[in-house]
Image (tube, rainbow, N blue to C red):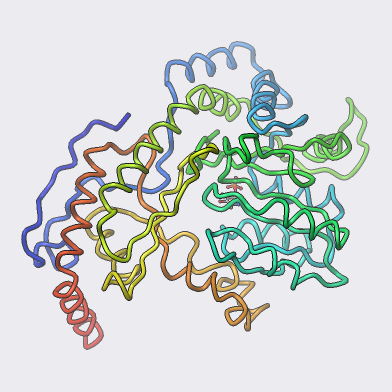
Length: 416
Ligand SMILES: *Cc1c(COP(=O)(O)O)cnc(C)c1O
């Protein structure tokens, strides 16, 4: 499933050949994280043609209705409401659930989780992540509950799943509603069952960089009839029938072209997972022996989509920091990403709202300083991953001299 073009290749034998020191980049065609998974073109274009022939481009078209049915099946829920993106899906839920005051959310997430709340006038209260993995820590959540708290917005970060039972217990103790930001978690299961039914609702993203994409898109899944009904009104200006507006609404509709992409992608979901899983296993076996590097584990019994290959770099063991690795790899044409650096609490407007947050969010701070996401997906091949891992091994065989040269280079830049 790779793009097929050779991206060769200059095997490094000397530290001075690293691109960061002026050598030729290992990959002339860069490797990316989140390169879109493209499904079968013939099927996709057949759907486009059919859509054009029928002249039905949006507003509850046949593809959108079918897409909703398929996503509800994957999520294991009664309802699915497709929307134009996950962020507006979260915003609609803030209104549908009547969230006000404060909602507890992890800081270690993509900024949209927090923005969706604040955009709707709700203050995001940032909780830390747990000791294991990268999802929200239930204890940290409970410590943030105040009389103003109305909800919890946990995130299944990197497709790892939150502690449903503990969060549910906290929500019941304090009479709060829970919505899961499941932007990364399409196709995942918990105790061998789909994850859509937990909390009041969950929201998937079908943005181009996500596991499955509809160019742009999102979906809200829920078992609750009342929430689904409200969301359907809200996403279409409050229209319940021709010339009948029942309530305040907005335009959050998914278009048919997006639904066509989403449906075609769902047909290939199992292949995308198989490719991602093979890439993950390859990284695991090829990087295994390098000191200070740990790949986030994935469960055997439950399904994951493996869309994020998350590497923890322990600088005291590795002898090199995550940021130096990021610098070196980028120079070689490997666009690894520091997700989700620096954490929501360190970007505006939250940094100004919560200047003391770093003291409370120790694990978030550590994760934000140590994680690196590696290229995966159907846009990268196994030989490319081999070459990348070989580069890792070269770097680790020469960490001391690389570290010294990097310091010299940085000092030189500083002097200029
Ligand atoms: C991508 C993402 C979103 C936003 O999704 P869009 O469809 O781009 O609006 C929300 N939360 C998380 C965790 C994400 O990664």
